[in-house]
Structure formats: structure tokens, C-alpha cells
Length: 255
Image 1 (cartoon, rainbow, N blue to C red):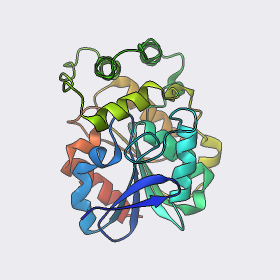
Image 2 (spheres, one colour):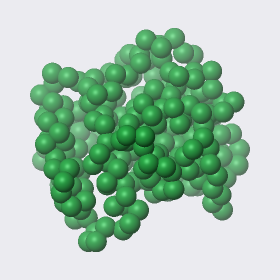
Image 3 (cartoon, helix red, strand yellow):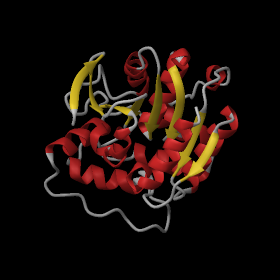
Image 4 (cartoon, rainbow, N blue to C red):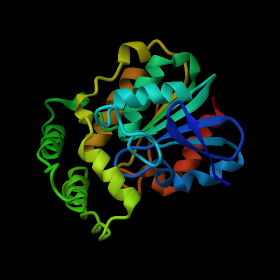
């Protein structure tokens, strides 16, 4: 059964009971949809599914969707301690939050972080940054969504399926939030702080794009993390369901 509450000022949906696992979604789609395939874990874990600012019933961002403002919300949500799992844009916020309150992090999992700035000077990464910067923020949300999705598809891969027309209201809300978001390439991951932390760390990629593999490899190398690649759903590795869940739970149980 879903239960909802306010943690700090943002909406959180709670699934299950057990040790706390805070789940932070990425761009475009909200928390409950991003992590829908992780619900089987609620039999053993208390999943706390955050809706970042601009999603669900959370308030609008102070200025625009920003991983640093997300980090403040996530850090407050950690309370006395929790496992922390972040996906894509939300993984950047999770990294920042873990540096803000390392004493409250039992473990950290970052999945396909969109920290493109880590590869500045890499031709393929710079091309994604340029493509995202060139997107028309005044376009209809459906047009923007399809163009945005193409920027993270590996060259030669099949194009994403057409977006629903019209977009469901909750998806349009997420698209509009993404259209105004601070670019993820501006993130400067706080490696100096995170290197001094002792909590276990896992970096997961989707095995679909050289750029995202390289980002994950940089974080793995800098923070001496565990490393995994879970193929089958491209950038959205949580959608693999059992494959992602088994790797995640094995990591959490080992903490």
C-alpha cells in the first residue's frame, strides 16, 4: 500500500517496511514511475520514493530544477540514516547530498549519473552537452521530450518510441520541469569530500552508451566503488526490474 507524507517540503511516497532506502529519480518522469519495478523490494525494505521539486505534489523549484537544491532536500530526508539510491539527474543530487551529510548515509548507489562535465573535452560527451543546450525550450513539451530523449541514445541505436499524444499530465509536468532545469553538465562532483567517507558505494550503468559508461568509470575510479553494468533498458536501468533489484539488494545486504 502507498502512503504519502511530507519530508522537508517535498513529497515522498513510502512502500513497505524494513531498513530505509531513499530513491531519487532523474529527469522527465517522477519517482513512483521511475522506481515502479522496484516495488517487490518493499517486502524487505522501506522504500522512500522522493518526488523532486517540480514533480508530483512537490513544490516548484526555487528558481529552476537544480541538483544542488535537490541535494538539500535529499540530505534532510536522510534523517538519522538511510541507504541512498539516485538515478540520472537524481544521482547527481544524491552525490551532493552524500557529501553534505555523510554521517547519515548507510550506503550510496548512483545509477547512470548524467554528470557530463566529468568528461569535458571528450568529443562524444561534448556533443551530448551541445545537443541538449541547443534544444528548443519554447517547443511543445512532446516535441522537446522526443528531442531530449534522442540526445542520450547511443549512435546507431534504435530511436526511442514516439511519445504519447497528448502527454499525460504528470509526464507533461516532468517535461516542463526538465525544460527549465539547470544543465547536469554544470555539476562538479564533490570528490574531495566523498573520498573521505567510509560508507559503501556502487555505480551502475546500462551498458548502452560509451559516454555513460565512461562517466560511471570516472566515479568508480575516483571513489573506489563497486561497479556494475545492467543491460536491457538503456539509460533507464531500474526498468530492468529483477536484474536491477537483484544487484541492488545484494549490495544493500552486504552493507
